[in-house]
Length: 219
Image (cartoon, rainbow, N blue to C red; front, side, top):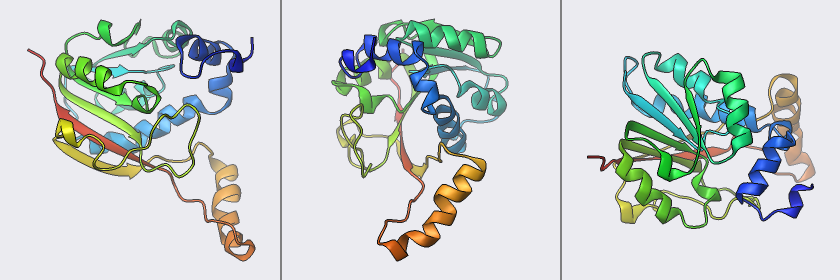
C-alpha cells in the first residue's frame, strides 16, 4: 500500500515507511547518525556517564553508534512507536542497548532523555513534553532550526523562543549536517555553490538544528 494512503505522521504512516524501506532509502538512517554526531558534544554529558540514556523516537537506532562511542558506560534504551523500526533497530544495534516498542507512556524513569527530530512531527507537542519531563533528570529536545522549506511531515518551525513558556535551562544552535556524503556532497553542494550565484541560485548552506535542554521533574 502506498505511503500516501495513510495520514501523515500517523502510526500506520511510519510503519509503512519503515516496512517499505522508504525511510532508509531516503537517507533517514544516515540522517539520524549525522544529527547525533553533530549535536552530541553540545549536550555536556560527561564521557564517563554511567546512567540511563533514553532515545525517544529512536527510529532504527542509528544514533546508538554515536551514543555508545561517547558514553561507553551508559545504559542505552531506545523507544519508538513503530514496531518495524524497533525490529530493525534490534537487528542492527541490539548489542548496544535495549529497544522497546511504545509511546511516551512506556518511557522508564531515567537520567537523560534525548528526543531528536521528533517534536516537529507531533500534533500536540505540549502533551508529549509534559509526559517526558516527568520521566527524567535532563530532557533534550532537538529539532530543525528555522527551516526555510517546509516538509509535509514537519508541522511547525522552531527558533530560540519557541519553548519560552517552559523555561529551558539552555539553548544551543549547531549544524545538522548533510545526508549526502563523499563525492556527492563535494559536487552537489560545494562545487555547485561556486556556480549557483552566476545563475541566480541560492547557495546551499548546512541545515541547522536547535537543542533545548530542560531540567527534568522525575521523582
